[in-house]
Image 1 (cartoon, rainbow, N blue to C red):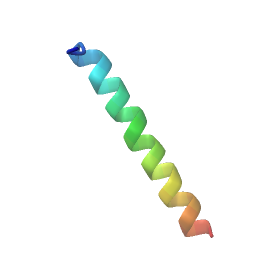
Image 2 (cartoon, rainbow, N blue to C red):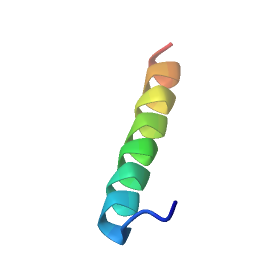
Image 3 (cartoon, rainbow, N blue to C red):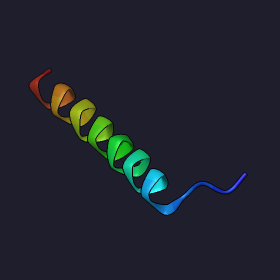
Image 4 (cartoon, rainbow, N blue to C red):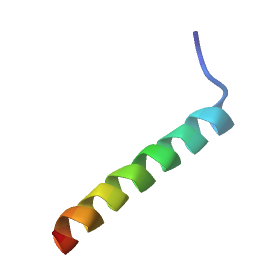
Amino acid sequence: FPLPDSLRFSIHLRFLAGLLELADRRKEG
């Protein structure tokens, strides 16, 4: 089912934030 734009945007932002967090953790090793 189609999601409202605001919801899709927030999910997308959360997804990107998670990826960035993972990348940072890998850098710290």
